[in-house]
Picture 1 (cartoon, rainbow, N blue to C red):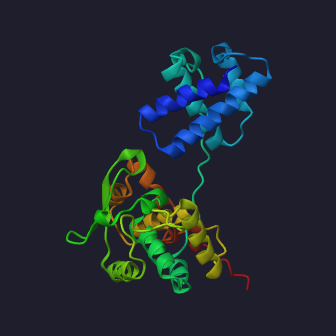
Picture 2: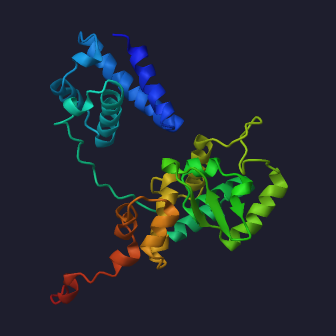
Picture 3: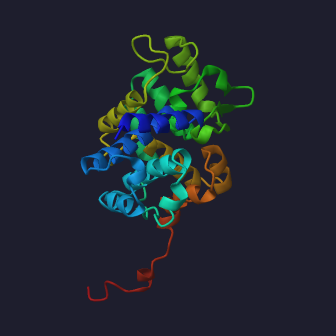
Length: 284
């Protein structure tokens, strides 16, 4: 089986459709793993892999998100490149996703992370992540020209799904941005990388968040995207309308945004448990 040729066809299609480079790498990596598995089992061409074989392959993948990623890559190839996807995938469904809720930080814990941050660049990175609920890709692609002080908004250009949107520019981070600019004098992108790289890396942003959490002695697992979840949850707790949060977060469906109502402690902690009607201590 000429694996590289088939993977190249998939890459060319994804590039034509303007998928992000990270998505292309993921799809191609998963499809490569799929083809390698069948080549080792003596299958010499993708067309010879039938629906039952695909189901047996996917059944071996226990993690639902990984299962779904393989499903997507395989389906795109057969449907859009081999043009036999409808037949092969007629009875192949996606797995049920684990409905895990993120364990968000409280506003006190966010404050602790700001309080221990002594590096101006790191504080500015963390402030923009938390203030605006940005994805890490949106942060590292942020340009100075996207920040509109006259309207107090930040324009997010070609965010997830290639969609543009606007988020708020809070007044109290403007002095921080001004100090940062005077100190670092970055040109096009707000956050330059090291060694004259024009952009800061997603990995470096992740290290900033992790180091601040460790320094603040946060015991919860803390990662870059969690800060976005914290922003959404804290907006709900502060009374922001869920439809407005959907708009500034760039969610296609309000169902996605509703996760923040499920993890808001303000809503959950105010539920009156029926045990409050029970005298627990009448024997004491």
